[in-house]
Amino acid sequence: MNKKLIAGNWKMNGSLAANDALVRALVAGLGVQSACDVAVAVPAPYLAQVQALVAGSPLALGAQDVSQHESGAYTGEVSAVMLREFGVRYVLVGHSERRQYHGETDVHVAVKTQRALATGITPIVCVGETLAEREAGQTEAVVRRQLAAVIHLNGHCISEVVVAYEPVWAIGTGKTASPEQAQQVHAVLRAQLAAASPRASTIRLLYGGSMNAANAAQLLAQPDIDGGLVGGASLKAADFQQIIAAAQ
Ligand code: PEP
Image 1 (cartoon, rainbow, N blue to C red):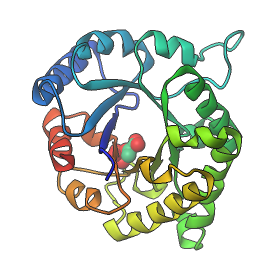
Image 2 (image 1 turned 90 degrees about the horizontal axis):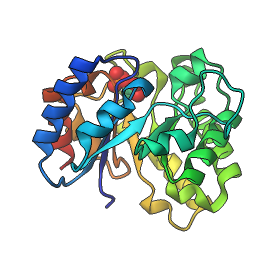
Image 3 (image 1 turned 135 degrees about the vertical axis):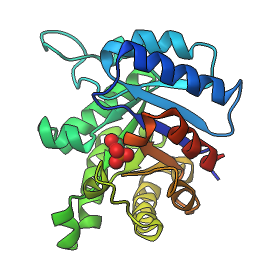
Image 4 (image 1 turned 180 degrees about the horizontal axis):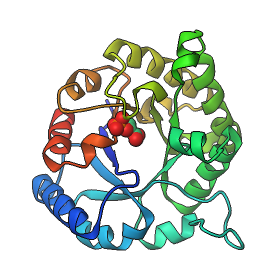
């Protein structure tokens, strides 16, 4: 069984004061060691603040995006090397909000994954189908296509990524995939990874989409679910801590 990973995605939320209170509460709750890995993916301007707050604790720092470029004239972009300088350990890649609102394609996601890996940051590669795709019976084809692009470019390094299955219809909607629905897709992803890497069983597959304190335990009990990517519920210390407890 893989060590579980619970990663919070703050999205475009937070403030200096709110971050301070939230991270201090999480660090205090985790103590010196945790039975599962825990990370928070914070907005880029808060990386230095949160880096200082998590120092010496098991709480890992994450970012929400990384540039596909190494450096240069790309206004507004943040490179993997820059993230690394702030102690970033995980970066979300290909979140559906990036795909939907910022035109990120499967190829962009594959290149961003490569940039993160080359810099020693673990990419959390997000895949997932829309409601229309699910209703058209295309779920497997969509997630397989999204993951195939990442495998194709990254070859054997694929064993170093984390994959998050996030059905788009479940993100921020309060609608969660049932444990069985989630497990079914995770099994598909695991099989696809197994065809690409002898270490597929050690690749952590997270579920994301309205995970909360009430549904986390059942989702996390599924054989191919190795953790969660948590949006809304990661903004409240007590809720996030209950999800962490369910993973321990
Ligand atoms: C997310 O943003 O990755 C996410 C899963 O959000 P939520 O938990 O709010 O659905």
